[in-house]
Length: 280
Image (cartoon, rainbow, N blue to C red):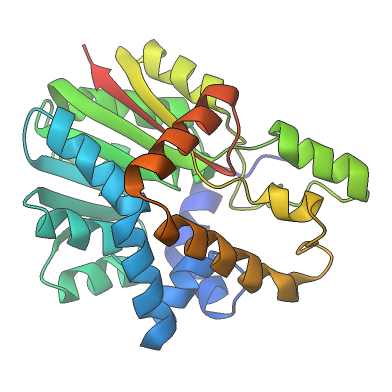
């Protein structure tokens, strides 16, 4: 990308502009659904709690050395809330003051700022957390490797580093681009400036002394494009495709879904990837 936004430009964008775009329906449709409230928000929260968040929480309960966990880029706090319900001791971190206020209004703990800024200020201590989660946020940061390095320093020995992110330039995306003559729609500056893959994230983890031990890929939304549901050229199809994905995930047993999604991860497929690693 040329020019790459500066760190100051990105921080200002997320702290001052991002949630305005969300409210206008121009960014993060998942956050938009939550912020609008009503049945739409309730249905989304149930789906997340039963699937995406359950997958994260089960790994934490099975593999983290303790209960103190932080989510970087916590948004409105759904995952933080679900982690607390599961008996963990979660902390939300977000650059947007409005998001932090929303999390605190639910009786949850949250800090405003960036993970490196909070670490440098002493608000986050070395070797103080059992897990750090980057949930759809690492790709939006100015320096992903630096953020993972800081997270590794905050983790206790044996602590977990988790990354959930877009799986960009994956084979199904490229097939859709080529077969439907589409633009690379996932390239979306100024916020999204890094484009990650399973192997890239695992390599970055190893560079900061974290050993990956789990990967899975979530539903490959590009399949809808290749099946004739062109939600890129016709955005009105997007909600229907999302709802079909939700219906599928809520209809199959959890272990069946997980086996399928782990197979996607092993092959590098999935619109969204999830990787967990353990600090040495």
